[in-house]
Image (cartoon, rainbow, N blue to C red; front, side, top):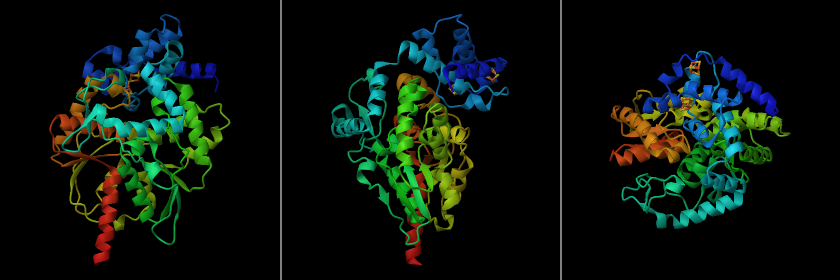
Length: 433
Ligand code: SF4
Ligand code: SF4
């Protein structure tokens, strides 16, 4: 699809908007700020004015399009079916082409294009993180020693530890199933957060898959899924990364692709088809999209739930936006959690409401993202549970930050980790029978 065709599509979306205002009642940014300028309908109207040359796409106008979490909640509340996410993305892309993006983002996204260099920088960063970040005594992560506004780091923000031994460096490319008669091969797309910050989630995914008789292949050439870049309007980097990943995945033999990061999964399944619209790799990306499953979908469809052992924890669940509205995964994690013997599950109010992370949104608008997160923490606390389970590392990081600042004893775990614990418990129970 060329630029003109894309412009026509966006114009068609904008004219669908009846200005009814339904989207106001669900937009977390509007609910936090009560400012009409932040509403989805206002953003659609603003882009319309830009396209009609009534106003210029200045840096100030660009900022208004940046105040969005990309949570997609407005899509589900729009009776006219306006694809507000596409409208906002188109505006950000046009603004980035005209005005550029912040120097920090530009540096980071340029680094992402060079996988080996990026990997080297993050591993060096892990070695020297103690210089800038002090470790918290309760083991929940690290807090900046100094104010780092240029990096979008508020001094009270708690970050996870960066591992000196990233998942993809530590694990071989091919991991055989733990059972002699393998069921097939799963390609595991790890994403960056699991690789560099939460490798224990990656270990849990591998454990689940191999324990259920699946071989695992983890392509070494995979890189960032590109979501941070293309959602910031840097479509060129998003495209480079999408092409690298489609080629890396295409070079392997596999039956299914599994992700444990909502943004990676949504990118592979939905976004690459748009980004690679006129690329020779479009057909290959559509083949990839058809094979992608979130780890909870995979467990429900291809793993043995009768082998889950006892996990005596009281838990609630937070729906990551890109999982519930990006990949339409909502019932699966709940069904699995409720199948784990000894586990007590309590649904929280507004579980699918955005936690306020929104990728770089929480770096640029930290106080606002904390304000949005407060509602999530209140709802989680009202369940009286000890653990908040979620399927996205970015949500995990943001919720952990809020819980730590509240001195809450509640902990956050990835869904894959609790499923893996249940399979390990099931294995031990089997040995003692
Ligand atoms: S709900 Fe849809 S139609 Fe109504 S104002 Fe929002 S974007 Fe426009
Ligand atoms: S995607 Fe979320 S934050 Fe952005 S306009 Fe829609 S509801 Fe608001």
